[in-house]
Amino acid sequence: MLNTTITAILGGPEMIILGIAILLLFGGKKIPELMKGLGKGIKEFKNGQEGTDEPKVQKEA
Image (cartoon, rainbow, N blue to C red):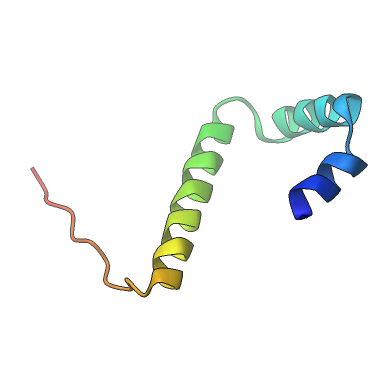
C-alpha cells in the first residue's frame, strides 16, 4: 500500500527531478555505496524477522 501511495504522489517528472537532486547531492561515486548499505540493512532486517540472528562468519583468504 505504501508503494502505491508514493507512486500516486510522485509522478514521472517528480521522480526525475528527485533522481537528479539525489545525484547532485551525493555524486555518482557515493550512490552505489549507499545502495550497498541499504541492501545489507534490508537483508539483516529480514534475517531478524526470520529469527536467524546469528551473524555469518566470513572466511578470510
